[in-house]
Length: 394
Image (cartoon, rainbow, N blue to C red; front, side, top):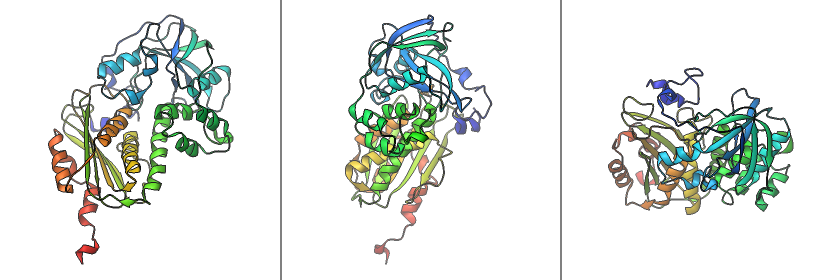
């Protein structure tokens, strides 16, 4: 594919409404009747096309689906195969209602009740016609199953809402960033994304529906930024650390080494990998003071990787220079969303161990990646480390 495809990753519509890459992806079709009764994982999706008028609605699993609570739980998907993830998502049917992002109607309120839940919620939906059977793929969000416009929607039971969620949803004076930070560690990131997307967090005057794609990046960015603000006050890491992980022909490495906080996220595409016709390396980074703009090159994956690094340093109560590297192989043929980066980098962070020197960490990482150490070229964080003058130089 063209160079623009790596910059676009489907989401920027650089080719217009039709993505030539998506046309190559074989996707199963699922036939659904005009009436559906089943548990929502819970899951709610808010579209972004036509903003500020958007399509919103809960997602309900097909009858007979096993473990419906797993269908929107990305934090439990690491280690599952690509076919398993696509199969799970294909069994979710999305109900669609068009509304203004500031609008309030019975369908939106039902979606909000679902978004607050911590366990599957039995839901009944009646469609105006048989839902479209196609599976939709988006480079940032998880694949989605059939979708159709809803004429009637009923909750068949009262959702189970965690007390902390209920408190923060009811606190209309707290900023959304404050609520997200207070929820982190108490509910999964997926739950925080649902709450923000459904317009349930923040000051009352600011609350509105947020497209799911934007919510994912907003949550990863907000949580990691809040942690980094605290990390800058920690003592520096004493020795380098390296952790690695593999998942669905993706390889991840988290490298930490002593120094003031800075961060770099690297994506390496092997020849024949998704969107790439030749080996390609892209990156974004931030110095100690942070970024001044959006990570345009690596987009939402940057913030998912930064969250994993920030969580590790927070647990260590140390600051460090941090590099997260993702290498994508040719067997990763369907983009499943930035959760792959978040959970892959988290797994690598959990495996992080001390190494004697930075050079040893780089050598081990080079042996782990199929593209070797090619990602090191032009690394701003490594250049900063090698060029920095210390007191020991005098």
